[in-house]
Each structure stands twice: as C-alpha cells, then as structure tokens.
Image (cartoon, rainbow over all chains, first blue to last red; front, top):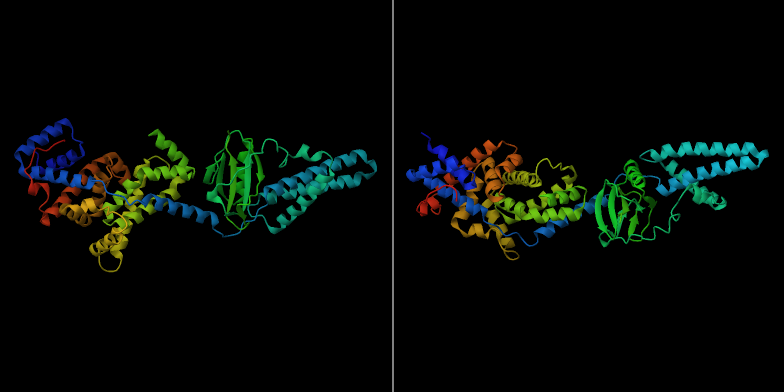
Length: 275
Length: 201
C-alpha cells in the first residue's frame, strides 16, 4: 500500500505536468478517496499559479541594465594605470626600412665605388647591428625609453634616406600611401566612441577575411569594426600579425575624435570588414 | 535555438549589440526571479542589473556546456542568496518595513510590479512564506514556478540530480503550504474551495 507521502510527490509532479500515464491514473484514483491529498493537490496548484503570474517590469529596466554595462566598458577603456610604452608600428616599419635602405645603399655603394668598400661594409655592419638591436627591443612587452628614443632616431633617418633614396622606398616597403588607391575608404568614427582616450590607434584595411580579434567590440558601423584591445605589445602584435596574415594592410591611424594618451591601457583597433 | 547560438557567439566576442539582444530576451525572467526572491522591486532591479553586468564580464568565459539561461539564472540566484545574507547580516529590522518603504518610494513613478501578487491576501502571505522556508526550498520553487525551468534545467542550475530536483521540489512546495496553513491562511484553495479531481490538467 502506497502512503500519502508517495502521492504528495505525485501531486507535485502533476503540477509540473510530468506524470506518466500510469502515475496519473494512480493519483486520480487515490484522490477520489483521500481528502487530505486532494487538499494538497489543490493548494500546490494554487501556489504554482500564483507564482507563475507575470509581474510588471519597470519601463526603465532595460535601459538601466545597458547603461551599467556601457559605463563599465568605458571605465575599462579609460583606466589610466601602469603606463605601457611601446614603439608604434609605423616607427617599427620605418626602423626596418632604414635597415633595408642602408643595406641597399651600402650594397650599391660597394658595387659602384670600389675605393670605398670599407665604409660601405661599415654601413652594412651598422645596419645589421641596428637590425639585431631593434627586433628584440620591439618584442619586449615594455619597451624602454631608450628603445623609443632609438626608434625615433631611426625613423628620422628613415625619412631622410627614404627621401634621398631613389626609387627604393616603395619597392622595399609598402608604407601607408603605397596602396592609397585601394584604401580611399576611411572610417567615420561612430559617435559612441568620440572622445575616447586610447594609447594608440591602428587601422586595418583591405583584408579578405576578418580574423578573430581579442578585444572588446565597441562598435561595428559603416563597414568598420572598432575594438578596444589591451595595450600590451604581445597582444597587439598578435592581433596585427593575424590581420596582416589575412591580407590586411595595417597602419597607425589618427582621428580628430580620438584622444591619444600613451599612458592608456587600451589601444583602438579599427578593422575594415571584408565586403 | 540556432538563432540564440549565433547571438551568443557574437556576444562572446564582446559585441554589445548581440549582448543587448540577450538582455531583451531574458531581462523579464531575471527580474521576476529576483523580485519573487527578494520581495522588493528595488532590490530586484539592483539584482537584475548586477546579474547582466556579471554576465557581460564573464561572457567570454561562458563555455556553453550548460544553457545560457541556466547560467544566467545561476548568477541571479547566487546574487539573491548573497543579497539575502547581506540583508540579514545588516543592522536591525527586516523585510516588512523595508519592503513597504521601497514600494512606496517607487509608487509615484512606476507601477508596482508586485501589485498582482500583492493584490490577493494569499499573494502577500506567499511572499512572506517564501522568506520563511529554507534557501534551498525557496530557490527550487522559484526556478520551477517563477522561471518555468524544466527539471533538467533546474538540475543544471543547482548542480543536483533530476531525482533530487523532483523530491526537493515536492518537499519545498509542501513546506510552503505548511507555513501558509500554520499562519491560518484561509485563501488557500483547500480552505475555500470544493476539491475537484487532481492529476494533470
């Protein structure tokens, strides 16, 4: 003989509509003869119905949820903490360019000026050592003042030699402007990120497929996606590499609507969406 | 739901507009759960905000082995528990005065979300009875009767077996009823109505 505890369990299951046919018949039969279980059945249904009644949510609920989240996102972007210094990509590219230029002109010098071979190989040696010097410091996550200063120097000489070098520049390094014809579409910064303070900003254009970006998507408008990426050399390098591997052209980008502060923890990455 | 999967994938990548869609889908259920759990609209609002904020923060680590809804409700329930603990630990008086004052505060600007429940004598008694049963019992009744989760989903949310869900749910409902009866609640169906046959509706 099954006791009432068993049928109370069935009452509860019945409220949820999870009885098997057999159980349902069993329960119905029991309820015919047991007033106490009938009372339980009715009360459990009553409690269930009452709790399941819809409530009215305040009209402002949705907005306030989103505001909280947006506030948090902004906070995360504008947190000025430990200053992170890194060499901007343009400087690195320029530094690489000067190495190439020196090697190139060194080579040419050696080829033509036979009497000057010693100074030419000196230049080559200097270029090689510069190349060796630059890459490791660029890969250090916290580039020091020294490397930045060095980079600045190289970038100056880069433009000098680029100006001096005949047609070498575009041949060895397709800098910004080299592909100007394809990239006349520039992002119109969405209003939601106007006034954003970031450590730096990069623009990636003309990719075939967009790789996954490790960052917070701030906006996706007008064919460009805007990501807040941690301003950490390793992280950014990885992102930019994956973009370049996907055929993107990456360059540093400036926009009047952005505030650049190298102490910021976040870098803005603008990725043109493949059409 | 494949559509929700797509939204989830996008939200996981930090796309806020996708996350907002999730908010739209779930906010009411989260709010209702929080309201039934805390008993005050103000607290329910705070908990709802906090739930989605935490979900947003943790979104990238959401693996999707459990459903998004159970994950979200678990966050909600945990916050409700924390909240209740905090409130109980706080100095002095409990719910009723707080409840009344906060209801009054928002009465001017918004419709009282609790109105429907409060409309009936039984509703108010039920709110109080929910506060009187154990945390375990309150949670399971809320997840089932308020949020409408299936046994499987509740099992996932509370990390217990489905068998335990069934039996705990029955015990929780009976405990609630006991409290209502012991307080001499006369509006329980058993006290006011003639009993019809039970079973599945």
